[in-house]
Image (tube, rainbow, N blue to C red; front, side, top):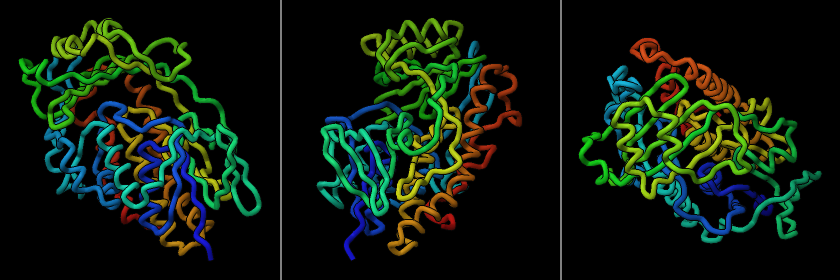
Length: 389
């Protein structure tokens, strides 16, 4: 019997993670990426213990520990005064959950995954190979590329993000809806804010309808920040664009002095801006031999930091299902969907509600015992490497 032809659409975090998981299951996936090159994109990313356990299963535990920062604390502060309201101890995550809580540059995680995939198969990733159409057949899935090429796949994994071509082609769906929030992100050289004595942990300054989050990446050489604010509308055609940091300063004008010191240190006075778009969860992720993963299946709002984490969980579980099914792809997809839908739908819905809770934030409600977050929901105990499949 010939090996099944497996195609993964999208070479982001989820796409590369599932390619690696399928390689480890004995398959040889081909990854199609529309971008002409793969580079050092993005800013900071949090890898909570549930995702860290998945990356360790994929063989990336040592690389992750070498590249990432482990925040000893996460402090939530009053937006106006900077007063600490809630302190979460992250230093014991290994003992409590079986893996540390990590923070690192998204580009560093992407590079780890890409190197691991190529170590298994140097030709696994095809860039400049955007998918224009998907058509399932009786025995295979036909994939049409932007340049007119046709590919046949026995299994097609759609890991192509919020505006997934695969999802749009085969799954009854509505367009993503603007959530009412915009976000900005930037990276600041740590030496530019050395006089602030920011410390090694992460800080969240929270006020009504607004957040400012900052934490170190790249061994503490850079400070990553992301800010969120409620707004009336999003009119840009692009999901992400460059903007002046003065826009963030205006949105957070009544935030405490440390926030503005970090913003002023933004190189060139420019940062990235994007609108937050939400979708309702899908009831099914599988259509024949086509399956969705990560943001293509369940694009998360960022309030719990579980978007990349759940994509990594998906990847590990799908790889394990492929191995457990012994070559029966239909059985592998049945097991995958059964193992993942309930958990991810819960996280998806809780993340959607996070914006509603933020819009009316009273800082006093962020004190201990009053917060509903990834810790109080128990999300970190999950282990995609051992959950039954």
